[in-house]
Length: 187
Image (cartoon, rainbow, N blue to C red; front, side, top):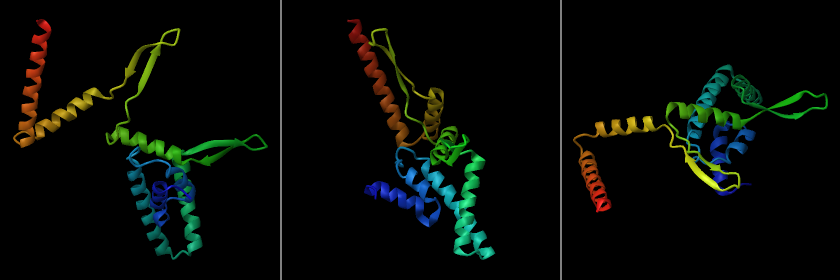
């Protein structure tokens, strides 16, 4: 059906029927390396499925009833979180709405960025003149202040360790090279 890696991701999604087939089909196209927040999404859905299975066991539902109720739970999750997209117009003119796993993925991406668990790749834009020649390339470096504060916190926590001593040596060597470069430019 799919290439081996995509098939493997599809099996991960459908394990224990946590994701419905239409969700697994769409989401299997995204690699875990491209979207690390997928793992949290899988974990949360499986926790939800385990809780649902406990309730179904307690109520002694049949297999058919379980599947129907699980589809309803997923349906309400999509409706409550507004993970739906307008697909096509019906003959009457009313829009038809469909559940969209991509909207769910987008929401999890936003949450991961807000928590600081995921940093999207920097955006690059190009400024062109009237002839279409490149004038300047702008590259977004992300949250520079946040990066600096996290780096300083890592350095502060590693004081007294061999890593910190190596950091101090590298910093001294870097200063030495910079001063040599400055002297070379002056002469």
